[in-house]
Length: 154
Image 1 (cartoon, one colour):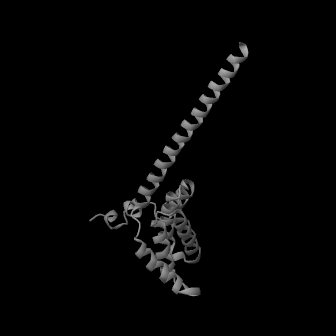
Image 2: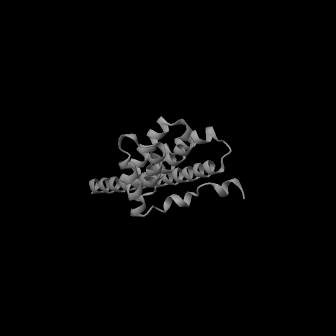
Image 3: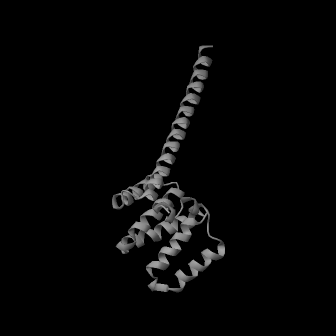
């Protein structure tokens, strides 16, 4: 099997945990109190990022950002899921930033390269939509201005 066959599939992130599974992670996180282990924080954040709820995804990104700061040995995993979490939240610039940091650590990682391409494709699509919206607004504005000017001539 190729290396990428062992890596988490990006499609997997789109399938959220069941409410029961997320509840188990939440309970474990809450039960550890002031001494939540790095693994528990990471697992809970991972589950939150997989959620369909924006609030959960935001909390997941916050927890992962803290794990990233606190635990250098988990940075690779954190960057990957921070990129995915940011992507899911529509924060594509942040997603790209995290992915670029990840690619600095592992420039030949096919998983990171694929994620980077997905982010770039989304940014390009969003850019085209933005251009279309601006173009539409300009066209409507020109039409309104033309109508107003033609009314004044009468």
